[in-house]
Length: 121
Image (cartoon, rainbow, N blue to C red; front, top):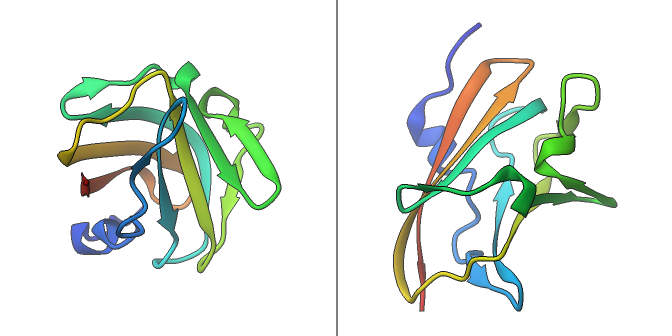
């Protein structure tokens, strides 16, 4: 397996998409690297705090899945050019900059961490 350069992973986050919702917060990612298959969501960390995966939902196209439902036997295809939304319930973000790390496992390259630095106004 090969690794994905960090500068490409940073480009996956859709700038300006981090926002609070009624139930928590959400952000979007657009696949700008290559078609991939997510076989597991490993972790979501926000400002150094790990978010329980039971509170995380992944929305892509017509699919709405709990992060825990993405498994090797039920993977999530993430074609190049497509967008997915990560929705977190139970926690709103304060105004200012936030550091988010989304760690996923892919069939193509194994485990990757998508680093996000984003601001909520």
